[in-house]
Length: 90
Image (cartoon, rainbow, N blue to C red):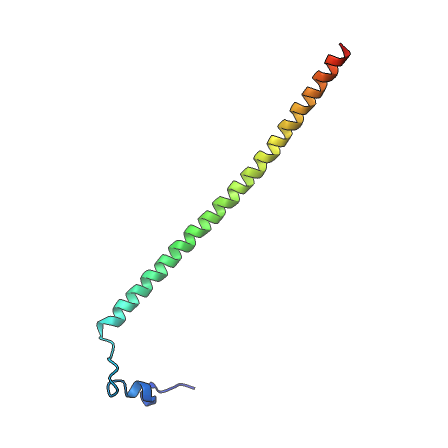
């Protein structure tokens, strides 16, 4: 069901009750602002996606470094244990 705005008292009596009409140049300015906001939103979404991917990459790199660090710690502990054992037996 379509509403006929000309029959609606609010819209049909705008001039009568003193509500100013929007100047003809305003809709274009509003449309331009909306287009700018849409463009900004797309730009921010793209940047956000890039940052999320970057964070994910850094997280994976961090996990790899933690694993490598743990492996080195284990090797150092093993070497120290062997050295201590050799020292005791000598």
